[in-house]
Image 1 (cartoon, rainbow, N blue to C red):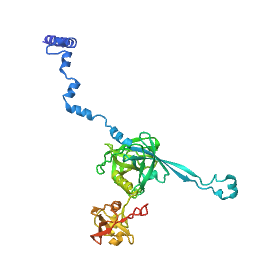
Image 2 (image 1 turned 90 degrees about the vertical axis):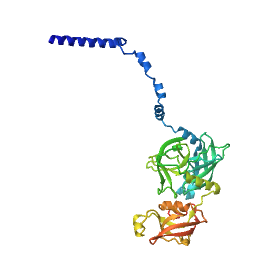
Image 3 (image 1 turned 60 degrees about the horizontal axis):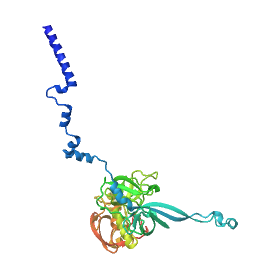
Image 4 (image 1 turned 60 degrees about the vertical axis):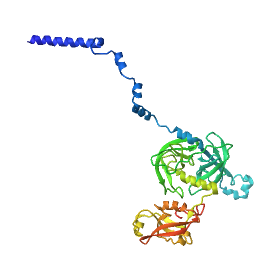
Length: 399
């Protein structure tokens, strides 16, 4: 019996060895097996497989790298470089009062004007050469020169400026129509949207940086009187001021204005004036040479929880009337210190900064309805709207 099992085991081993050799060297000898060529013909090619699977093609297309080149190319021609010069007089040498000293040196050490250079960016907003920029870019400039995207350089004149919003409007006289930026819908911007900042940082030339909208409605930063900034992490550096902040479609959403930085370079916190504000200011300056805002003559302050308790104010929002100017529209209308301003013409007052914006938007000469909280109840007060003093004569806390 043992001999029989030995013969069986040897036979199986030899059969498996023969099968391995045949399957390796001559697979066509085995029944039910196709050749390598037949197998390859039976399988579809990669291209045929993708064509027969539209979902796979879609996923491959979605995997391609996203580019914002079209948006940048649309806006780049409308962004200009602005170069300014102004005269700065040096202090007079103290020895210039000595007649003997003046006899030998004349006026060479006297007060002599020197030229100071400045740079920034701007955005062409109309084909006839109207340019939007920041007021601090062109403030006190004696000469303004604008360099276009195509290399052309032209002198520019200041139509008007608005220091309280830090905006200025220039006019460039070019021999032909200029490429103008297209305005985006002011209400379309959302936190998280991709934006591009275009300008001339550090005078290195036209530069595009990318980021997202980090926040909207930033205020109380101490930059301007009227603040409603777009915050972005797109790199904004010195020289970008007055340049364009555009959306992913290449439309203008803001005017780059300021950065938060301890070193002077970008730390990913930049601020831009919304296009809705910039457009309103521009239209008033072009039409009238200045910006007219409403004013009622009150001083406001933030309503803290402690102040709310002291005035027995149970709600949230609103702005505390800390003072009323004697003889002002608010005084004549019956507004009192200690009132909490709740609404302006039906618009809810969120805080002191929001109240400032609402009052400034009123039209001088018209009537405005204010809703205030006083002595545990609400009441409506009608006041005439005056004209806000120009050139910052009214402080940021007065309206």
